[in-house]
Image (tube, rainbow, N blue to C red; front, top):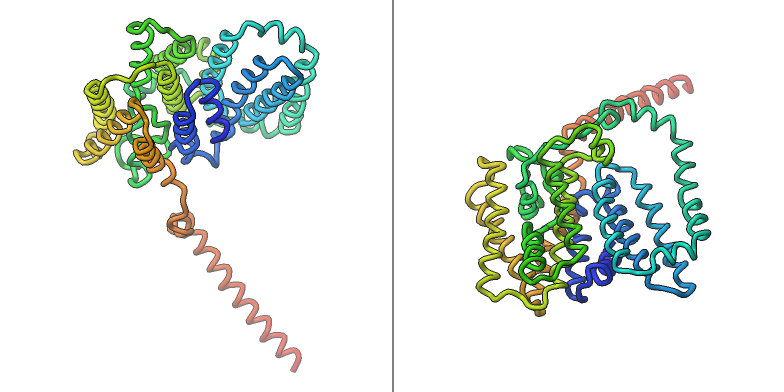
Length: 396
C-alpha cells in the first residue's frame, strides 16, 4: 500500500518525491488504516483502488507490448477490490477511484482507440478476472442467503441523514484516540473516530483559490470537490429510497462515508499542492493554519462538550494548525521530519505491542473463558487422580 500510494501521488496527483513520500505515509499510517487494517479489507481497498487507477494511466501512456502487463495489473487490482466484500467502504471509495479514472481518461486522447485495438484482450481479461469471483459466490451461496436474512447487515438499508456538514472536521480526534478512550465521551468510540488526517477544509480552500482566484481549474480537483459535496449532502439529508438503491449508497454506513470524504479532501490537498506555483506568504499561512485548527477543535467540542475539555481543545487546535502550516509551505528537511513525526504519532502509535496479551485476559469475556478453562482443567486433573488410584487398587 505504501509503494502504490507513493506512485499514485507521483503519477496521478503529480506531486514531487518529497510530497509523494508524505502522501504515502499519510495513507499507509493513517489512523483509519492502522485501526482497521485487520478487518473489512481497508488495506486491500486502498492499495487495489489506487493501483487500478495507476495501472490504467500506465496502460494509456504505453503503446508497446508492455501495455498488456499494465492491463493485467489493472485487472488484478479490480479482482482484489471486488474480493474486499465490504460494500460500506467499497462503494464510496469506488466513487473516488471512478472519478480518478475518469480524470485520467479525460487527460488522454487515445482511450477509445486503445480499447478498440485491445478489445479481445480486455474481453478475455475480464472473463478470467470475474470467473473465480463468480465461482466463489456460487459455492458460498448458502452462507450468503443466511447472511442476507439477518437483521444486520442483511436487512440494512441506509438513506443517509445521520450527520451535519461539520462531520468532515472530526479528523482532529486522531491525535487523541491512540492514547485516550473515547467510549464514554458522548461521541464515537476510538475505532469509529479513526479516519484520514485530511486537514479539511484546506482542500476546498485550495480548490476555490486555484479555480476562481488563479483561474487554473483542474478536472480532478473539480471532480473530488463535487464528490465530497455530494457525500456531505448524503450525510446531512435523507435520500429517497429509490435513489439510495440506484446509487448503491443504501449499503453505506454514514460513518464509513465520512472517512471517504476525508480521503477525497486529502487527495485535493496534494493535488492542489502540485498545481500551486507559489506558496502563500507566511502571515497568510499562519492565519489559514490557525483557522483550520480552530475549526477542527471546535467541531469536536460541539460534538462532545463534557469530554472535550480545554486541554484537549488546545492540543487538537495546535496539532492541526502546525501540520497545516507545514504542508502549505516550502518543505525543507527539518519541516519534513517534523511533519513525518507528527503523522507517525497519530498512526504508528496505534498497533505496536505495548501490553502483551493482558488486554485479552482483562476483558470480561476473556476472564470468563479463563475461569471456565481453569474449572475444566481442575476437574480433569481430579478425574485423572481418581483413575490413577483406581488402577493402583486394581493392580494390587
